[in-house]
Length: 70
Image (tube, rainbow, N blue to C red; front, top):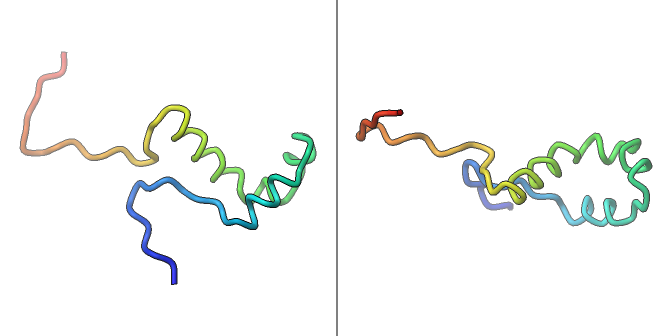
């Protein structure tokens, strides 16, 4: 049984998916594969989060504090 995933947590790839990605040698082959169509969005989400350090779902603003935007 897998543990529950926290909201906004970084998506993960299975060991099989990581091994299959490692076996592809050319980007053109990867982009034309069914594997990429299946895991491409997950890879993009991981890349976005690690490069920019942004969560997939930002935390909500606190409702108890009001602030003025300038």
